[in-house]
Length: 165
Image 1 (cartoon, rainbow, N blue to C red):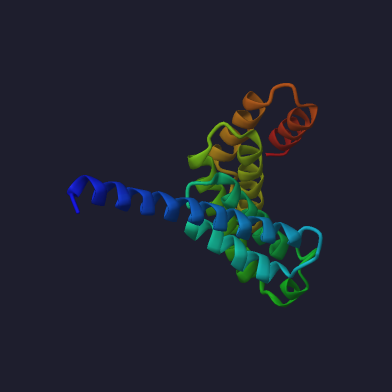
Image 2 (image 1 turned 90 degrees about the horizontal axis):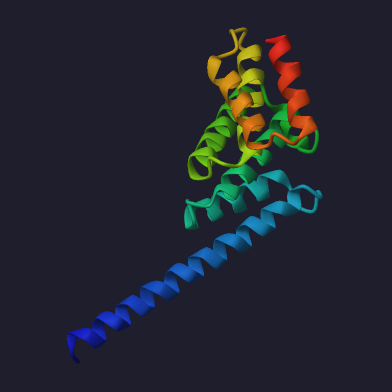
């Protein structure tokens, strides 16, 4: 067998492997979406989204979904198991959610909703800790409005949050 054929064979196998990883990651992502409709538990959905992130770490929507699931635990609305969490555990969930939003923004910086939820999460975290709101929260709110200037909701949140900060 010559080296060209071997190289083509190896590249084809690598290509097929990458495609299957991407499709499998998307399958796990879609399964994690079932937590919004309460079809599966948030814990199971979190496991699915972690697998999706492992298989395809460059997709920002996976990070945003992980933020959403962590927020579900924190908010204690849809996750019954969250009622047993201490305040420290809830703050850790919020911090993990913020880290996932930071990564999502890094992967897709032009998505206004990422900036908005990142700013709101920073504000919530620092208010819970009794700290002053960081400048980055204000910058992220401005950035969200700049990226989506036609949104009345974004403008309203921006004005409301900046006046309360």
